[in-house]
Figure (cartoon, rainbow over the protein chains, first blue to last red):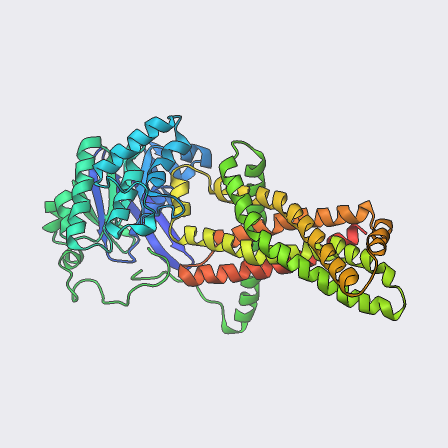
Length: 256
Length: 268
């Protein structure tokens, strides 16, 4: 369903993506893993049309979204849901209004039906009774769940998750992962997730791709990636300080 | 990134030239972005669907919340004008012209300019900070991927609200300023009320009012344009938002003064 071909992106003098290729099948959970600053978020921003590549193509059901005008791209985006790293909830709105927002703006549903759907979705993500709270009044884990509810409220065909469990404790990480799997089984959307959570993601992914140095160096089912002979993959999975990739200082600037 | 591709550096003697060229290109690009931003916002301000709810909220945000400061500063501006102009006019025995002097100063220049600058400091800075925070917390990206246009949703309502509220606030500033001048001239300095207002009717013409009106409208475009642009293009983190807010206030205030001069020259 989604095919990325030869994606290249450079910011100033920094090459972030170097001819990246990736395929995501319909209704699967694809998790992209890789070191911080390796280009995962940049890849995701290309997939949702927030960035245009220097070269390469992103085919969604055969349509290259990198060449579409805004209006045509918006039609494709209407089939997407996105869960941002920090949730990206509108802090001027309540939890209810955040989740209802896409329906109010993009559908012709009446107020009663919107209320029914939002309450149902909040119930599915375990946030009954939280509708009137503001995002600032709820915990980080709850904010992630609100973001998931908002992304799923329009019943999208493809959902992108940008490190949905960053900054959460291990129990909340598993709670969010469990929620994603549950929602995926119920709604059968295609999921593309960028994550650092190893080994947890191996339990939820249908396929895993390892991004290193701007390119996918390994992809396959979780078992295949875990048993890969690629020393870079093994070093990353095991978190070894010494290994095939050089030590470096934490990256600064753009989240890449 | 683990590795970075580097473009070839220029020979050492030519690097200052390269830096000047790069700087000039950056300025041209920034001006282009600035102009295009305004163009996009204008298009979405005049082409439906309109976000009337957002417009009302922006009118409240820019106009109503600035009302207290406009009334306060307008009153004291008029009082200061009344005091200084009265003392100057009394040296040449022309105290009778206090009313027209205060009214013309406020209506033609001080009303629109000071109102613009004060509203920039109050509502403009808040506008930049709000949009800047939305930018760094990916709320603007969220709007975009929901296939909602951020210009239509965030910028166009602010622009229209500016055009509506600035002339109204300027009118209020002028009225309370003239009242402030009256308090000083009539109440403290002993000028007769008839002289204060009678001479004003003689000297203040329709062209003075329209000049103030056009200035207020143009500042109502400039302030939201500059402030939303700076918020949209703010840097990373809290520091980026803080810098963008400062830049927005300074730039909008400078543009107000420069534009005031040009408009004043044209509308003489």
